[in-house]
Length: 127
Image 1 (cartoon, rainbow, N blue to C red):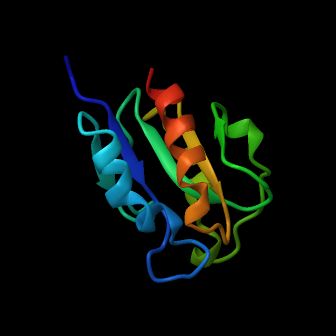
Image 2: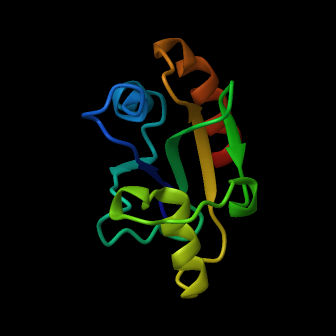
Image 3: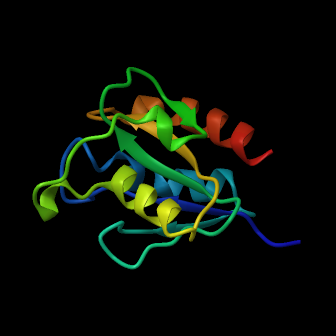
């Protein structure tokens, strides 16, 4: 059986957007049978079918899962700085490179206190 893949997305250099990377070592210990990969949507990132993407999400107050890109507000991109994960995934969907995406959203500017909720939500998403 193929091991599940969980992509860690965000910016480890930007406070508030770095939480997925901060908790990555604990997630690797909690889910030893899962392959965790660091990914950058500005690179050639095409998530594997059935994978989960962990990223910070603006506008949420608690850890939550998303099963549709329609749950994210669309915004118009003007510069390359506007190119975010949601926009990247929409492009991939229009190009028929992905069908379904699961995203585990962590509120922006979270603290390590979100770790138990991330573990619980990820366990549900992977089951």
